[in-house]
Image (tube, rainbow, N blue to C red; front, side, top):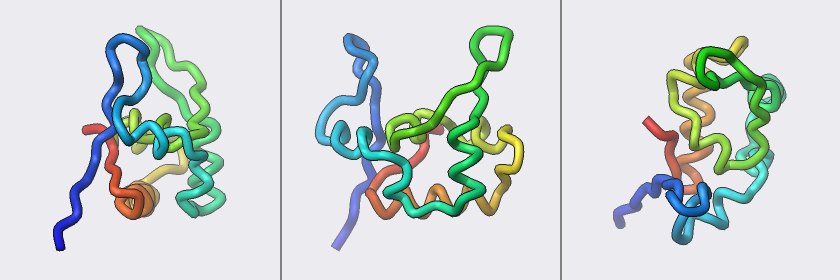
Length: 99
C-alpha cells in the first residue's frame, strides 16, 4: 500500500488552502503531539516581512506547513531534532512542510 503526501497549497483568490487539506489545515498544532519547547517556539515564531522580522503565532497546522525548513531552523531554540519531530508529526497526517 502506498501513501501519498499532500502539500497544502494557498488559494490565490482567498489566500487559504484548497481541497481536502482545508480540514487538516484548520486543526490546532496541539494535535501533532509535539513537546513543550517546540510548541513554545511555534507560538512565538518570527517571520520576515519585507526588511523587518515580526512575530507570527503558529497556531494551526496550516500555519505550520506554510513555514519552510529554513524558516523554522532560524527560530531560537529550534534545531535539527525539533525539525525532525515536526516532520514526523506532519507525516502522520500525510502532510509535509513547504520547501
